[in-house]
Length: 119
Image (cartoon, rainbow, N blue to C red; front, side, top):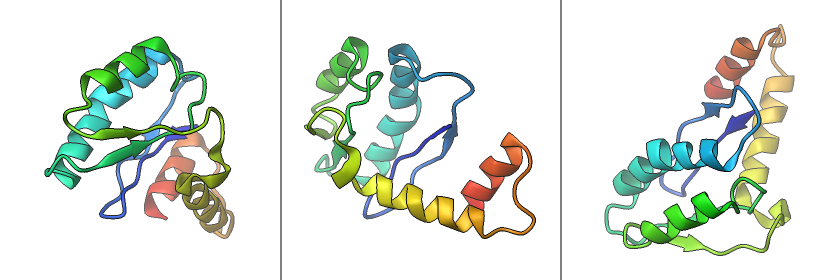
């Protein structure tokens, strides 16, 4: 599984998740990757971060972190577990389609991560 982030200005990193995403692991992703991306891509502070509020994303620690960083960027509130209107789902579908067309197909998790990053 991977965590990804995008902006109309730029794509963020794909982060390979070794295990299940918990609130604490998600908090590390936010602090290690999201904050720096938002400060670069939206240095004016006008960026908005949207997530689909999966369990880890709606955790107390993640919610608190987003509130504490609300002066850096805005958190666009989204109905819990409603990804069908989230643009990231379209990006994931495009990535999946691109990876499925690869020949030979990825055989290991690292091959898959490489294929996703290449796509």
